[in-house]
Length: 469
Image (cartoon, rainbow, N blue to C red):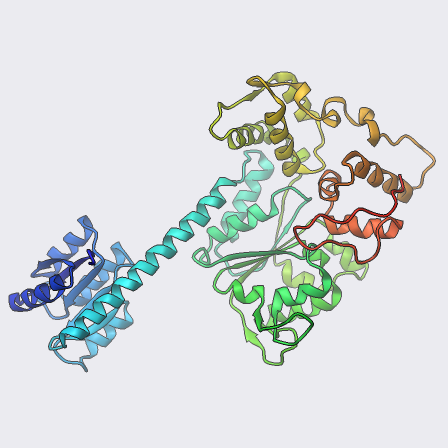
C-alpha cells in the first residue's frame, strides 16, 4: 500500500473531508488545511509528495500558493482544483507550473489517477536529481587543485565564461586537466542539469568518428543494423566536450563546421537534418594556429571553435602547486589506510622534475609511491629513477649522440621510451606528453607499426613485428 503524503488545501470543509476520505482509502497519508498561508507553512516544515489546492480562497489564493511552493521546492507537484473546466485561471496555473487541474465534481477514479501520475512524476524527478548529484559528486572527487597565479587566472576565466553560450577552446599539454576544466564549465553553466558528453577525436578510428559524432541510419555501412543517435544528440540540453579536436580529419571538419553554424547534423547515410541543442567545449594539445597555417586544420572551423580560448599552464609552469597536488593524490589513494607524507628530499626531487606528462604523470607517480612505500613516509627510494637521477641517468632513456638530426633524435627518443615502458604504448605516450594517436602515426612513419594498427578505444595496441631499437 502507498504511504505517500498528500496536502489538501480548501476553505470548504466539506471538500477537504471528501478528498481526505477518497485518498486515505487508497492508503495515502492526508493532511488538510483551510487556507493558503497555513499550507505554505506546512510545506516548509514537512515533506509532501503532492499538494491539491483550490484555486479560489480568501487571503492567499491557489495561484499565490503555487508560486510560493515552486520557490520552496520546484519538484513538488501541485494539482489545482476549479469549479469550472474552462476557467482561464486554472489553465494559466498549469502554464505557471501546476501539474494539472481538476474539476471539483470530478469522479473518484479521475482524482486517484491524477494523484498517482503526480506521485510518479515526483518519484522520477527525485531519481533524476539523485543521479545528477551522484554524477556531480564524481566530478567533485576529481577537483581542480591549484593556488598559483597561473591557475587563479584560469579559475577566474572559467567563472566569467561558464554561463555564456559561447564555444570555448581549452588549450594545454596532455595531462594538464583539460577535461576537468570542461566539466567545471559544464557544472557552473545553465546546462548543468543536462548531460556532459565527451569524445576524444584522436582515439576513435577515422572511419567511425563521423558516426559517433553525427549518428547513422540503418544500412549506411556494414554493421549499421539500426538507426543510432550521434553524441551531438545524446548531449541534448547539456555540454558536448570535443577533446583533441586537432586530430579531426579534414572531411569531418567540414561537417563539424556545419553543425556549429546551422545547429543541426545529418546522420551518416541520412538525408534529413536533425536539430541539436548543446553547448560545445573543445580542447587541443597542439598549436591549432600552426595547423591552420600548414593546411591541416580549417581556418573557418578554428575561428568558430576559438571564440573564448582558455590556456592551461603545464605543471612545470606552476611548480608552487606541486605540494598541494601531492597531498591531494596521497589522500585520494590512501582510501581507508592512514595517510602518508613525503619527506623533504623526495619533495625537492618532485619540485625539480620537469613533468612532461603534467598532472596526470604526477598522479601516477604518487599512486606508485603509495604502493611501494612500506612505512608512513615516502622518500626518494619510492620515486622512479627518472625523477631521482634526472635526464642524465635515465638508463635506457639516455640519448647522447650529437650527430643525429632532430628527426632522428625524436625517433630514437620515442623508441627508447617504448623500450623503457616495455612497449606499453599508452604509458609511453603519457611520458612523452603526446596523444596516443600521434604516437601511432609516428610509429607508422618509422616503419615499426603497420598502417591501420591503431587500436579501438580502450584496447591495448598490438605489438609491432620488429622493434627498431
